[in-house]
Length: 386
Picture (cartoon, rainbow, N blue to C red):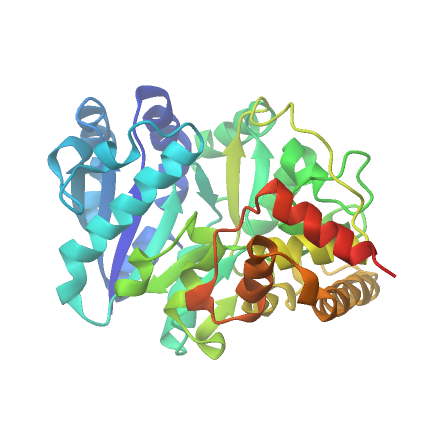
């Protein structure tokens, strides 16, 4: 079996963080070493010319397990220009996503002759628990083509010292230990997804319920595509890869959704200033969630949400089944309300009607997930009609 691992990182502070935190977790025995022991692995690092020397020296340990390939943004061409040229003039964070899309296109064009290979997509600040890549490889051996994971976002100022202490002991970091750290140091993004949050998220891409004192259950509509088959579909994502890459790449029965943090666990270290000033959203009622789902997802995204994903720092809690059932009730009510809105859609103008069609249509016709304000308000008014 063949894998291509993809990561984009540029700039000294981000490269330093990747080398200090993300790479040591990738090098744990159950990740890159286990993957390379049973498969051929190429590790692709996309960076700029200024950052290349730092990454080239700092990631040399990968050479023991894979073929390391560093692609310099200024030197590569995608659709007749460098990725930097394609992203020029775009503001953050969309700038990063534009770069990422062009780099994925370059990766596909570079390695498309490898046939039945898989691509593992990593962010530079991902923290993988020991054993995650071994588990991913096992699922591929079982016949799955793609895999999706819900990412647990951690507060970098709070979690980083604890993680560095664990790394300093030169011991593995197992999933339950990593979950426990995450529950002690959640990012405000994570806290805003809790259904009882005081300041609930304005963008409910996942919903979280607490499970006892050492766990949480999430329903994720837009999980991260940790793996996808090498094919032209990976180069066709319209927005960030979370939205449609796995669904474009594979049929539903070939997409694996990791349901338990004991098997696969991906965390993401993020600074506390990241979108700290964003406004709270409406409460997670079936009506409000239906509006989000209709305007930002496709009907096939329910494949992900139908899987209750359990993060836990200890053994399974006695309340797990009850919490999962509660989450299923809200999910079902939200999707039922989409049908109510759709039944009233005959009077919508063209811009709003396009998004109704985007939800119910094929994933190939799925539109950009961000509704223009006028179209969103039209859907909101329709949902309130008697």
